[in-house]
Image 1 (cartoon, rainbow, N blue to C red):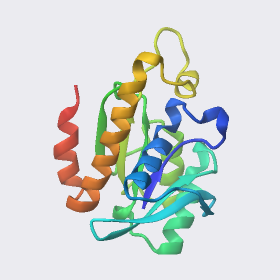
Image 2: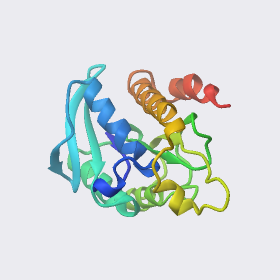
Image 3: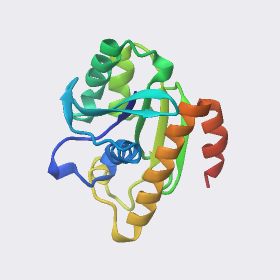
Image 4: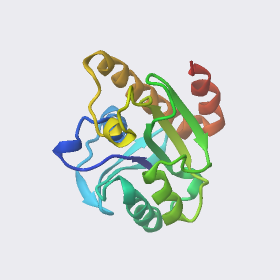
Length: 187
């Protein structure tokens, strides 16, 4: 399962916090599918990559309770923890960077905290997309709910593509291969 995190609704559509949704949509698109079916309190689709059947979801429960939707899909399809890939925004990574890892805490990300709580484990794969820290006195909440500035949009699009590539690398060659290939890109 690929779970791209974000918030539903047009008010959040192009915000930094929704870059996980964008990655999920792009992954589906590259596999000739379109996310749209409603199931598991998510919008979802099924696709195939590298002979692996995939469920791609965008939880519609709002970020802070994303874990409920992920758990429902996991339980329905009996998906093993190590076969769940969560794609989401990361304040602690500079814009333009992604990071792949397996396990770990939430680092203050409410969506990840919800998934850890709902699954009862931290042992799922993650593709974190750097959105950078807020500039000046801007609050973190305001930063993640803001849109990318005009001079950041191309970088955001490149990060979505890199996140999709990292996700496909995890599926075809494993998380260690994806970590070696993509984590070395960090500035």
